[in-house]
Image (cartoon, rainbow, N blue to C red; front, side, top):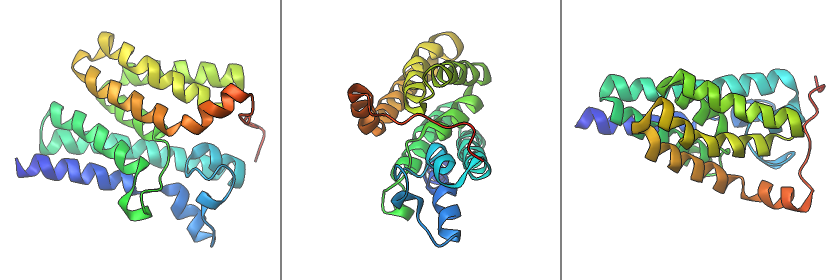
Length: 194
């Protein structure tokens, strides 16, 4: 039991690792005071460009993968599912950064890819299709979150309640984006930024 509890705690603190914040702090800045204020891939793209965004995305995805692997190594599949929620909570509300974290999309993606690669890829494709159509990341993120529980019914039924919780968390973190979308004020992404 102690190993299972340790795995969940470890997953939460893995989520606390914020490449966006660390990268900006290394430059003497704080990404949470720039652009949209979100320490995630999209804001990193807007503020620092493609390389910083790609590094942020890769590390945030890997956090999700690492949490699932830790859950499996120290517990079992159910512990891995709990670790998915823990790592996303750690990313969204990190103790190390005064509970001011990101929106959890990339970390959720990494965790879902580790739980079921086909499920993760299907959710990613749904999200990317919306992003390409709208040139806005938030609708794609929200759609990816919404379709995830549906996809679990095909690829990983036992993960369904955890996927519902992830979807709720991601939608809550996107509440300001949803308000902007309804007002027609949400920013479009410039894919040509260096």
